[in-house]
Image 1 (cartoon, helix red, strand yellow):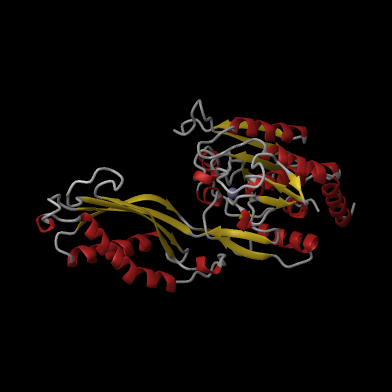
Image 2 (cartoon, rainbow, N blue to C red; image 1 turned 90 degrees about the vertical axis):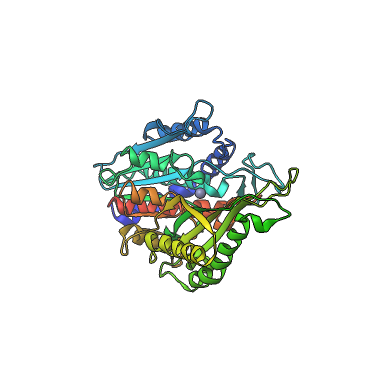
Length: 425
Ligand SMILES: [Zn+2]
């Protein structure tokens, strides 16, 4: 049997499964897996597990034992399915998170109705990323229905909590060696990044908190106290004048989209100081002020230089301002990741996109972080990308949707990639 006919039969099987693909996406949307707090995870894990079992996968469930967020009220349950081919390796693993962010306001239809209208599937999590999970399942299923036996194995996992860091999900599976370079060769995460774009990584994240400490005094005689808020103002002003222009001038060679995110950035998440402004006020000089920052750093910058640059700004502010006292505390550090140049995983998806969509794939990197980091840094699997159905800009928006054409096309691309990576075509 020639390879071309393998591919043709598999693509025809995807096409023939369109209604099932759409129905399964709708079914997944109807399970309101809202995070926070992590609702209905068990129902969703079982729904995916039952479908995988029906598609001839060996199915395992992994509760995130040991994680504080894994509670009786909100159990963190992950599901992994394995379908063996002639051999276990090469092993291709497709991972999708099934948690969704809260619906929020502004919807014109039921966010958890799984409504299909105008050739789109609507609902919270439709593109991010229940369509991606359905695409993964039916990519593997189309190969089976086409009667093609793989030379390697394919796995599909549905995991929790990506939207809140993935610690009970992909990180947990990686720490427990269920995801590991010893078991899998390639990982594809079908996040919605547009059907012709392959995401090869993301920038790093450094969340930190700066606290300034002053001395309380009577508000009518502020000169007798030390204002922590004024000192925070000094720090913010220095950051604005000394740091932000430097960050804006730094550009990564990694193709982050949108263009603005190709630079190093700094956002102020929140600030609090002195008395609560909604309460009864008394005349006092503020003796503390706290600010939380979100610094996104480039692969080329690295974490150590990123942190030390911030420390230097703080030290200069303290050295040049009498009585300015501050503390710096790390809140979260995520290292940047990048799929290796020349990865066969990227090449296989590029070929699939060319074949199915008739156009050149674009390699991009994500402005924000996703589960790639755990796959790379904990599981040690370098050949990892995100590729899946749906438009990136619609994620987390009201009236989120995924086009059925995207869903079908990305399923075809994923199926071709599985065939190629397991050397079955
Ligand atoms: Zn997502």
